[in-house]
Length: 295
Image 1 (spheres, rainbow, N blue to C red):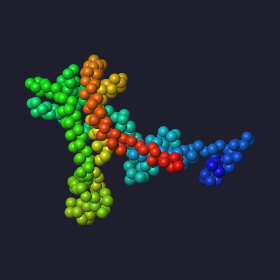
Image 2: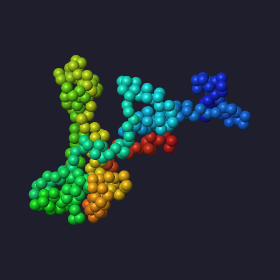
Image 3: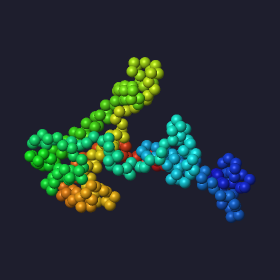
């Protein structure tokens, strides 16, 4: 580092950064009053790469990152507002901190069909299945009182995999929909105009101002896989932050039944984890990001 940007002296502190740059020897000598400008380095050299790395993470924006780094958030709030057409985004919590009933409200529910009586039922997770009688000490059973036969592990795995593959197929179909609800255009072909909607007549004559976007996004598919995984996650009921209807007694009851069905629940959760392991949204390839440092 040939030069260090400092806060400057009384005469130079209001000057631009190049005017406040001094040699390393001048800054570190014993009688020097020059102090490195920490805010400058955080703003110019630390904040930009952190912003780029965190951009794909839902729930983060420049305002939130600036606040975490101790910077003046007002300039980033103005910049963010300008980039979004004058609409300032609110700082939202991380998705991992959002309750499941809100986070997974748009997820497709897992349905199970009994091979004996053909009853179709919804498996809503350990707590819900315990109260409905589907989760028992002998396994997951048909909710039909006249049948009540247990689902075999292979039946559960096959039905779970079939529904995961159906969701994956819906994503790869690549349907595009117009953001304008009055238009309702739906297609699988991206036009030469990019995200601009061509309108009902397909001529891009300005009749529709909407934007074309994917009907089923990669975020929706990832959220769907997380929902399926949460249905069989027995460990999550051991924490103090988990609250279910019925209080602590019901929570203990769910925990006991989950322990008794640990084998089948672990097998089903492993199926979902196998698909999540292939999802690029779950991983950050650090060796690719920092490959320049390995040379």
